Image 1 (tube, rainbow, N blue to C red):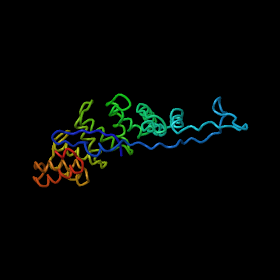
Image 2 (tube, helix red, strand yellow):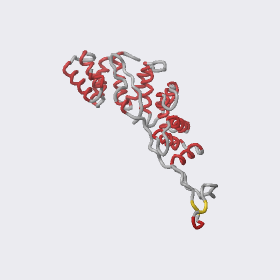
Image 3 (spheres, rainbow, N blue to C red):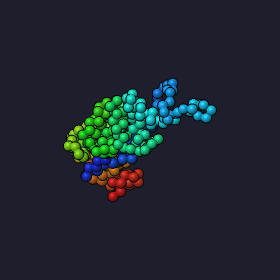
Length: 266
């Protein structure tokens, strides 16, 4: 589940990514406590401790989690702690909120091999959060995650498919987009499946096959993907890939609209 995705809609059969993913936030881990083992206290430096009333030692103030995690990330290179620290900067937990710092520490977590950090970094560089947008870097990050196994693989495949489909600040590649949508669809990403159907209906990035497209729309609509219901309504209204059925088309459009899919409400 994940966060911040992108939306691309075709003109004739406009659905692509405009359903589930717009409502899904970027996956971010909850801040976790540092895994550092406690050590014996050192002698207090000037101003950190000393004798209180009656000659008793006054211990220094304990460090907060953000300080502890900063040390674990910067000094020990613990990738998952870097990711957790990035979330703290992103949410403003135990200190100020700073997207630039969040992006910096997601970068450190990614460099340490933490896939979730790479995914969140990809979203930030794609959307220009915490710094300038860098679509080529986003494609690189998403593609690496898509090619690997992990919890963020399917979402990464979908996001980079949308980028190639829309061609926003990168060269469009419909064939690559269709291939990546299919890979995400194989991972049960229903919006990606609807996008495969749309491209098959239009003949984008591969062969045109209205019958196959309609079957895909039927399957995704039955799975609760409102974009699929809308696309199926359009196919039924025009008799594409099967029999024309104006009554059923209207029912499906109403279902999609009532569910919050705005394109079906026009």
